[in-house]
Image (tube, rainbow, N blue to C red; front, side, top):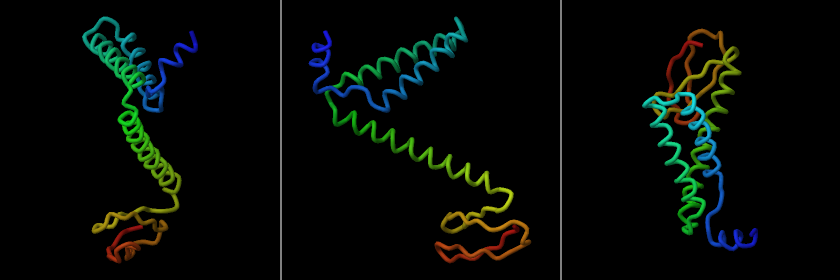
Length: 135
């Protein structure tokens, strides 16, 4: 039986990170739908759960490995961008007592200046633009 399943999966996409995320989202939505019960929103969530489960199995059993791989890479890229933004936010939150952050009005670069210096002239390290800010 195990060999038959292995032969069946040859040339197919299988499970990847995007499928794992879809399955996790499926479980969360299923729990939420079960909490809502037989309401209209609960029924809609059950339909969404079935659609996500169908998409997950479609991706898993697909023979178009190139397309599924590019979808997975897109998911990983967006996940990395989100994690990077969260990391920056966390670091800025940790430094909020000692530093104030300013954004350059011309190039949108972020600069960090020490707090408690009063009104200061800030020079952008990226474009050289000068602007005033209160630290």
